[in-house]
Length: 441
Image (cartoon, rainbow, N blue to C red; front, side, top):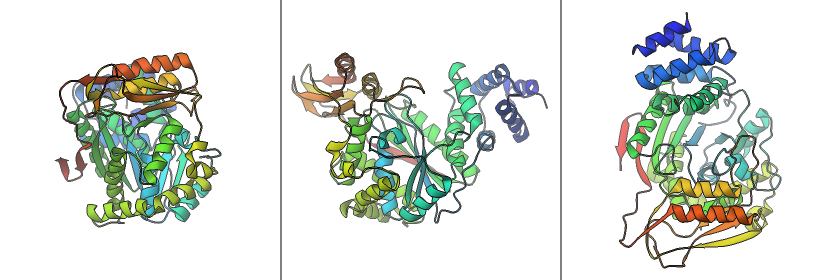
């Protein structure tokens, strides 16, 4: 088998065999196939596309390129949740305890963030002493005992995906649905989940900017999951403005704790109910959406979800006094109000501009080697549809550097669009994709 023939076949619109896909993934991972040939194949795939079977085979070839996590010792159906990313996306911190309190095991492998704010692990490390460093046996023991654990992804999970993504990034081949979907799903499948719930974001702060593209990506990922024997469901949710109010690590942790206490932002809570309901149904802990939702709401109302969060944090070395008193979380030295420059209705908050404002404060990493300031960030106080008077506070900046704060303030002003006429607020959830098809709301 020759790489040249595989490139030529795909360039001419042919369908690659499983053996050909396995050959190129294995050879590229081991270093026997050079970057320039894989670049040529990626460009051929970009223009010619892949069918469902090819995409599933590519996904599994990447899964098989490295370690696979064996979670078979965890009791019950393990359901993983993945978000395609956004601004102020704190769902895992709220969702994990809610679902665990309702009886479903949540075994979550997460990474560190690159971009706007930290990843789930960075956010949790805002809590003093919290650590993801544990053996696989300890991870499994924690899930069996308290139904919730968050660990770090291993260095050798889907190494083919890491190499391919780096190459796609510099060859203008990132933006292909089959390549995006197989990249995401390979990591989820290798992480050992029995079933997968996907939160596919759409809008200015999302990877997929249009609703149709977001549904297409969701369908591709659900098809991959179905083809490889993983029950997979995707919800398409709005990211045309930040989710909740907080953007920044310690600020997002506080917001998550507030939500578990029953006093968090309504959009964050509602999305967690929607995603959590699917997780409970897939794990057979609820027969339908109504029962699932009632269980999750009861877990919050009874404080079981909050107590589960404390139990989880304590089990991983965290100081739970910071949960009881969120004033103990890392705090920035400067608090600066951002005031509206005119009156009217907020018509749009460009989510990625708010994300970049938080990044400029130090809330995220510009490179993988970069450091994060856990204390800085932004709390927005006006959302789309709200009326503001001139000089009303639309956001508060938490900073440790006045020059960085000024840069962030400018970006926040650029993100807010204020008009005279009342505007229609976009829905939070646009639909759901299952193995049975697409349902738009």
